[in-house]
Amino acid sequence: MRKRILPVFFVLATSWAWAQNTEYLGNPDVSFLKARDMAFTGNREGARDTLLQILTKYPNYADVRNLLGKTYSWDGMYDKARSEFNKVTSREPKNREAWMAAINNERYAGNHSIAMGLANKALSRVPNDLELMALRNKV
Image 1: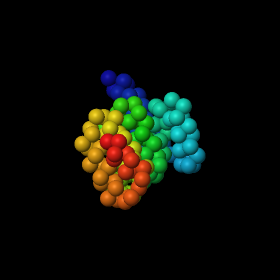
Image 2 (image 1 turned 90 degrees about the vertical axis):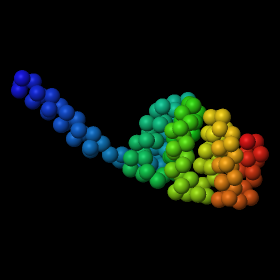
Image 3 (image 1 turned 60 degrees about the vertical axis):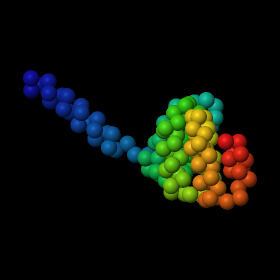
């Protein structure tokens, strides 16, 4: 019995140590551009993998979170998208791209009253923005 447990323990310990040492080491801007290209050519799962990897080291990279949220929204994962957009708008209340994406996410999810509330909140943070006004009117 002991001979069987020892190899299993070794594999688990090695796997845990390896997982702890896998840190994102790339250039976040270059990786973001690659992920964006993947997302817009239909490889959203690959794009999400790259974006999530970037966020392990740069959790406040708003463009990365916005794109991640958009890929979730495009694939109907509205709750995950909402979470990403909320992180950006909480940290950067004047990030109009995040507001636009959050509003559209709620529209796609069929949450029109939430979308309207977000549009009004966005306009309180980014007043007189013509695109936000047009989106609010669309809602």
